[in-house]
Amino acid sequence: MRGKVQCGAGFRRSWLAVGLGVCAIGAAAGRAGVAGRMTIMDKGDRPAEDVGQAVIWLVGPGAPAPTPVEAEITTSAKELSPHVLVVPVGSTVSFPNHDPFNHNVFSLSEENPFDLGLYGRGEARSVRFTRPGIVQIYCNVHAQMSAIVVVRDNSWYSQPQSDGTFSLASVPAGMYTLHAWHERVPEVTRQVQVPAGGLTDLTLALDARGYQFKPHLNKFGQPYPQQGRRY
Picture 1 (cartoon, rainbow, N blue to C red):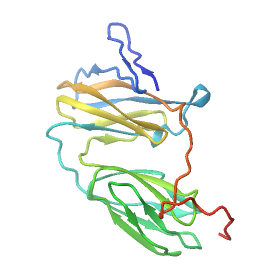
Picture 2: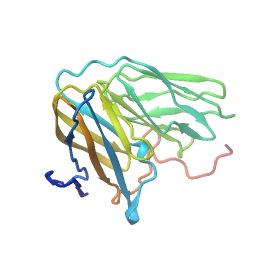
Picture 3: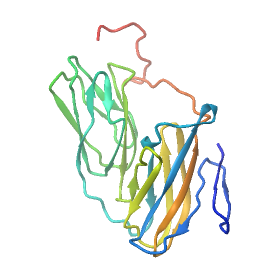
Picture 4: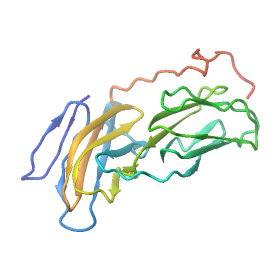
């Protein structure tokens, strides 16, 4: 994947061979933070319509420990919603079933593996996410159902708006590793220097044109049965 930085006159242009470009301009005043805009290029050189499903976060010294929360991913019409959820480490996520048939929500992700077993309409089961990482979640009954929980160990994270704009508040001055992730783009990183006044007009360009869909396996590590289901 390839990416580039597009900056105004007087700013250095740089290239990053993993699909992430960054142009940083020090904020003149105001509360320190990091803000900018992300774009994702899909096949056919089309801008991705789901840029809001991306996640941006910072890693650096002195990061404040986040406060765990309680969140929810619902199952309805054979879909898990929201598709991407970001929570602080230690948070608990509930998976209520609103469908008139059973689901079996599970994850084989190394950071937080779990298996909620079969449960029916009106029931809910929960998972506490104790380690930071990217947790891929599926249903063992319905192969088309998927969700992702991004677990972070500090409060410096954000998801872009539908137009790609994002912001991370209360970031002290210093050197950080910026991470940008989207499910169709391998996670990419870049060192950024945040001045006392913060950063604005940070530009992230991700390239998803090389993405190829790969079917996932069931909770036993086997392909899903090909025969149709009644529900």
